[in-house]
Image 1 (cartoon, helix red, strand yellow):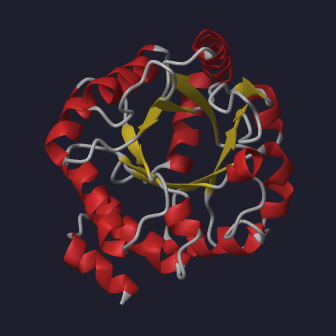
Image 2: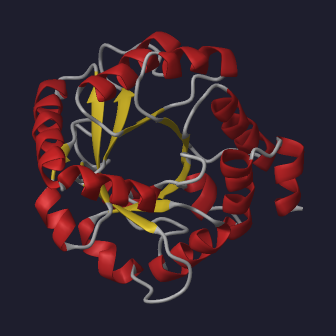
Length: 265
């Protein structure tokens, strides 16, 4: 029954027809505090749901704030990891929620964040292993956000370390792996080829232009990626609903950048 439960929950966070997904993470408040775009949770969730996003990522305390009680449905991924920019060790994530608690809060999936190459890696991998076991026990999909960030990492966008990050998530039992985009379709193909589970890209810092964002999305999809998990470039956009619609057009409808960007004009 847990296998069936996982299949049902997976269909709540991905497009069941395309097997791809548009996720909008909204867990930034723990790391950096109340930022623009995430002050009215019901309002921003309504906009991204209307735009066609498949799921959002939240921390447990804001599930009630974001629950709208109506409108377009959207999957809920509960984030289990936390650290703050105020810490002397901002890259060392710790668990602040469990799979069982996420189930009680109505989550469709859980996510965990692991940074590789720093002094806290050992503890984060231990947490990852425990969460992976619990997720399998409960039939809960697991999204693993894996980034090469730490003292040993010279370039966190190097295809070699991104490939390693994606493969680690795969080997540890994640159902979906989220990594940074390597900068080109050719190099990102290597990342996808080395991972047997769906790979989605992170949105990164706020970008300067809509075209830049959509070209990154298109490159990832053409490389065989399974979608995106883009936060700031959606919820801080002047028109979040249209931005999600444009991204979803590329991810779930096979649009080109020139066609998708018309949603924003």
